[in-house]
Image (cartoon, rainbow, N blue to C red; front, side, top):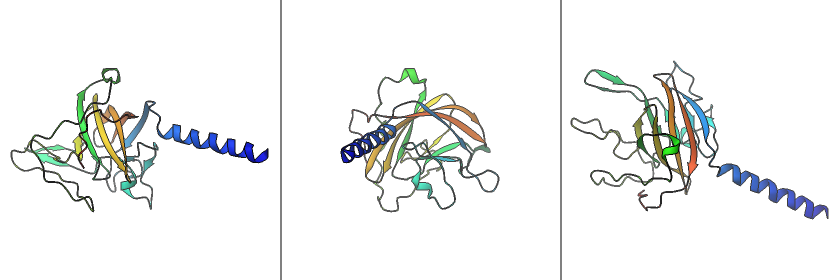
Length: 196
């Protein structure tokens, strides 16, 4: 009888753990600008599957999904400091525009790129930023995007061989300092647009 009771407790605790990892409840996180030595770097990244922020000493940045800051682009004498970037270069991020959560009924497909891009190697895949003259795409492989308060974003995340989708909205931004995101895990889009 004790063995059956112990097994039942184990099954319930495992199911609770799985439910927590696939929860679609709306959550919130504040990310602080990633920069040495001005800001603390342990609160600039988030892992959407676990909700954990980091990286702490000894943790790798690619254990997380999204990073705020650490990139500064200058164009026509103006500095653009507020960027979100994928932590794992195999992941992708796109902006969905100025929206509220109630505007989103289902997960939209990723917009197709304007021109086909050569595939990147999966091993040691780089983050590619194109700031060439006349380019309209800052991040052709959808790895980096500007922070816009009130805008929604969709991410396709790779955790090992597992693919996860997350959506988030930038609730507020204090440039060069922090941004507040509301976020949740979402079902994959119905369209098979998930090029690697």
